[in-house]
Length: 136
Image 1 (tube, helix red, strand yellow):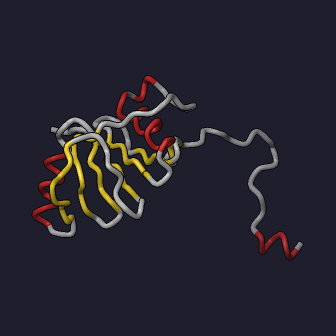
Image 2 (image 1 turned 45 degrees about the horizontal axis):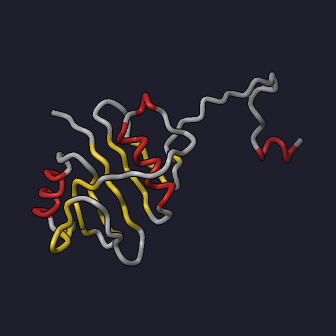
């Protein structure tokens, strides 16, 4: 069964204290058996809080924040919560895994994995290679 989850990557020097289920002792995710436990904890509603030291500090973390530009109700609560939360916490990166969409990376309230649909409208075609342009 596929499921989605959110992973909060905390780049702060000291791990933030977040609402959720804190662990008494952080789990060292470099240990395989603890990584398996972290994967199992990702099934619980809420995010996993992973510090830059590669340690899991909490699971079931609730993300909130004020509304931000770029929210999209069609993307769901997990995605929009990540936008809001990261806009309020500059040292946080959110990895949003959806059960039915690609993975999204969110930082500072902006989806870094957004696809640009812009296509050039000019009729100039492809620019020449630099080597060809220099020889002309």
